Length: 193
Image (tube, rainbow, N blue to C red; front, top):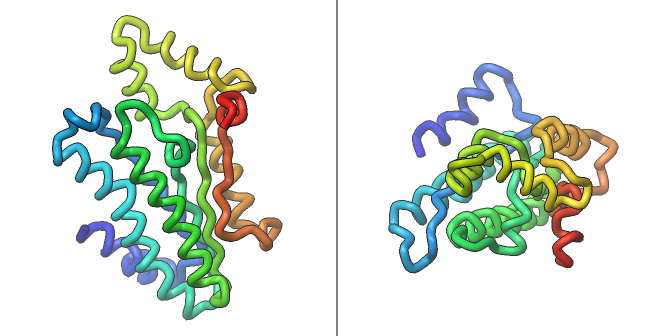
C-alpha cells in the first residue's frame, strides 16, 4: 500500500506532471474456489484490483488539475469469461474492467480518458510459470498449445500489447474512453464468446 501510494507523488516530483498512467499489475494464485486460501484470494485482489484503484485515485488528482490524462489498464479476457481455478483472478480482472469504465465516466469532463486492454495469452514470465505448473514435463508444449487456441495461431507478444497502449494514449484514440479493448488474437471469437 505504502509503495503504491508513494509512486504518484514521486513521479510528480521527478517529472512535474503525469500525462499517462498504465496499470499493468497482475498475479495469479490459482486454486479451486473450495480449496482457495484466504491469502490466495487476498493477494490477487490486493495486487490486481486494489493497487489499480490506489494508482488511479492518486493519478486522477493531478490529471484533473492539468485537464488532461490517459489511463490504460491491462486486464484480461478472463475478466469477462471466468476460467477454471481462477475465480480470484477473474474477479479481480472483471472488477478492473468495470472500475476503469467508471473512472472514464467520472472524469471525461476533466479531459481524462480511461480504457482497459483485455489480452489473451501473452508470452510473459507469468504465463511461462503457468505452463510449468500445467505441464511440468513439457512447459514449452503447454505454451505452444495455448498459442494454438488463438485463431491467429500464436501467443501474443508484450510488444503487441504495448502497441495497443501507445494507440490508446495517442490523440488518434481521442474518441475512445470507457472501452474494454479486446487484444486477444481472436481467442474470444474462437471460443464463441
